[in-house]
Image (tube, rainbow, N blue to C red; front, side, top):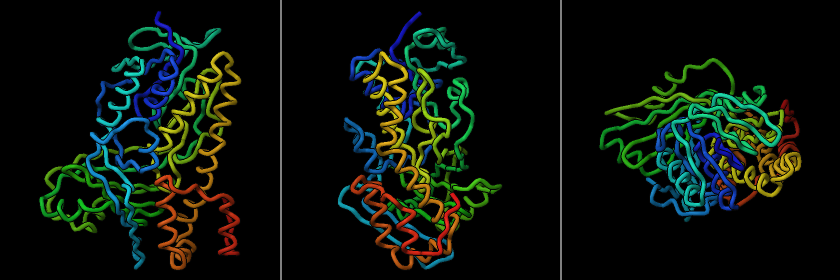
Length: 381
């Protein structure tokens, strides 16, 4: 039976970054991916600068477009904001090539990969786990579950569902030449184009990624809202469109992020941003933290657990908490949000842009700051 220091389930950003970091520290690492890489992955593919800067290698060959300007619109409102930067605010990638490149870099450091392999069960042993897979049994000392929002690995390891999962619908759309020329110059977000959510238009190399997402659990017809959004964009000619529905976990798990030798990273842990639903940046970051915590405390599982929690609490978890408060105001308190926008709209948009470019930290004590601006504001979450 093959034995590894760390086995990682999932070859996305969290898993690939964990593998890269662990293999760089001379650990024996295996990535288990259920599909064959490269494979299509449902995702808007917008990589913000702070996420791109987390990567210790160049990915410019995969960037389909870079945008130094983005636009934010508000439904049924005159509110409109645009921000510009000299560095690219957001870079567009297709996840099949992006994920495959990350895995290739991990392989260069010594990581191994088994794709087209399904994890079917976990068997605890004295010093780790036996992984029952479609390709046979594998032994590992630690396991990092980076298998996305559904994360069957987390279920096998005993986690219940405590994350907030929101629905989203994305289309890869090929449009006529005139429409593409008009829409391919800027990234666009339309807040409230979806009740308690937003729509987006991300220009890729030769098509548009257009999507709608709702940041509140509710019954909603996303297909109809997508059609409405196409009209708003003024698209006259659609040559092809491929629809992909998915869920995004925008709140961290309440049961913690490690149980013995099993660690959770990325969407499996619930680390997508609660304000924007962007997940790549925190997936990369949490994969790095999980691998580092294990590598630094390899001989002591409980110490590794505590180290991972401490690393998450230093930055990532406080950021998610702040972002959740901002998202609550933004999507569930529209009258209060509009009041803030009227007074601080452009300044706030510039500030958020700097946060997601990694130029500024998330503000702390956000509740107190908002209450100073609007004394009657009462938080329910």
